[in-house]
Image (tube, rainbow, N blue to C red; front, side):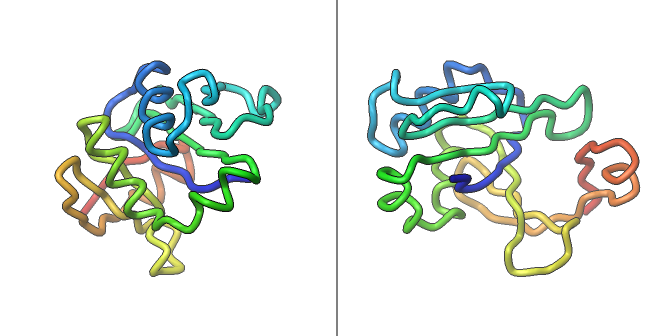
Length: 136
């Protein structure tokens, strides 16, 4: 089951993602999958689907999936807290959906030191090109 999506400001290596997710959920490195195609999703404690964009401010989307046994424990954690933890581990800002608004072009930017800022995505660029470009 999908837990949440985030977009890191810099491109991350698969090894960085493996280590961060394993550390965050408390499992072994080999119990985390990093995939580029949803068809490769397996029953591991955690899997991250990485979708790479060719351009934009945030060039990757990470979709984090948890299996039922881990998900029941971990999903009780705040998504904002989990994203802040990953931002700190990755050493870069991350974007997540702002669940406090129905506006799909509003995001929450979380920095590595835990600061949070509401930002807007350029809706025209996103709709036409699928690219995240922050406008304020």
